[in-house]
Length: 428
Length: 170
Image (cartoon, rainbow over all chains, first blue to last red; front, side, top):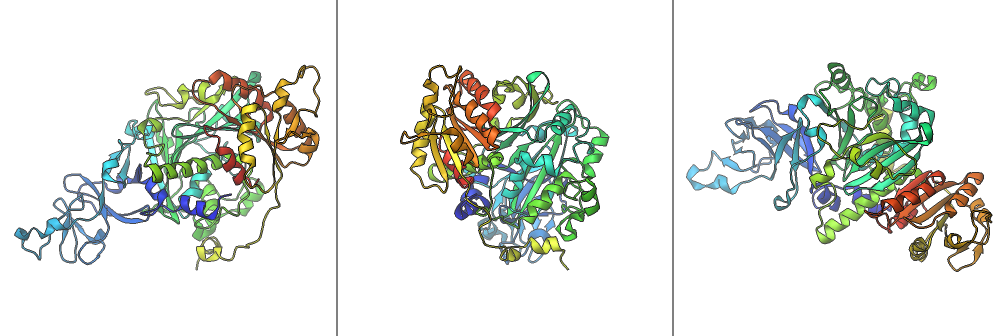
């Protein structure tokens, strides 16, 4: 349960809001690199943290993320001509470079210097790991570049997708750290999805549907451990990483790629659900990439040419009551991603947390809110950099491991929970 | 025409959600297992709670011969020092939260845990003081608590207890 004002504090991320300031302390995923495939390609509308922006790639391959609207008459520059190192408004020909600087106002004498007086808001846009990242905070507080491992491995070792989720970012993110729902909502997919099936760890999962949980604070966020009995009195642990404010990494299964998410606010009622898969030890196989493209694993099938999923609220998520009744799926919705999204969107755009009744197995969610609220306060009151901004906090891994019964998992699996270049994930 | 899911997920439709209480108060018993934890929950007890009871089992740690023969009474008390019977307390609880401090003698957890198991009451354990460098102390505490707590939280800050209890409507 959260009080109304706490709920508003955590769910509002527009300019001038405390939670918006926290998000603006980080590099966040803005769009896929493939959305700007070549120099002078068409610009792309991007809404992030309730700001209408436009991304484009100029004649020299530089990326820009600028205010969507021309400073002259408020025309959307999405209609602009991307030419000769700038984006030219089709209405009266005003032209902007990737920094938002106006470089040409045809109606004014060039010598007047008028163009130099016009500058649109702009944010840096850099490429890393198939993703274009932006930083929307104050220029003097710009942090080091993102160091998430999936974005630093060779290109063929990773696959990244994004989908529109029609809900506030927080209820989507909370689904990512809600370990106890897996035994219900996703139970039928563990042994059928090509990106999950066959792992030994699945047997532990299916043999014990009531795991014990441990939630432990980490420097950047939380470790959320789910514990089940293994052989010889040992414990099988699945340890999820949550790094503030919205990064999760799900524990791996067997030799399958490792996956996780970012939940990035578009505005207060929509977010981007980013999903990644990667493998340190080698490139993803063709069949794995094909499965991801088809929406298997944590990804989702898209309406071609869009980032909207084929199953969506307009078609009732293609719910299949026969499959639900037969036990083929628990909720009747197919696929991990849409099973989650359908329920999270059903809560409404921003769920009223004053009505909820959390139980003790929700401590991962409770602790995440606690840390977010504490960090927002520290940022607003003292200007303290939030956890998760430091690249050291980003060099983390999830793990699935078998450990002796009396050891704190964060110590016993210390090496497994951080990036070790060239060393595969600890996975059962 | 909008699908039912699309229509029902709008903010406009949210206005028609039933605005009535959807739960009854839950009885949460918060039990400190040792002296440092007792100090932490004494601070908490001064706040306003719906249905939380604060107890201490810290005297259990000093009970002589506790391993040979233990009693379910005599070592559990409220914060004013009034002795309480464990079975009575557990029987009227919806949730028992055990608060422990890393490295302390928290043997009472096993008796409380068994009583909760017998009465089918959910248990949560919260470990305070788990700072870097006291791994051995934490390991001892975890070994004691793990068999008896379905949810275990290791927090770096004491103020988490208050947030957790509030979130659980205690």
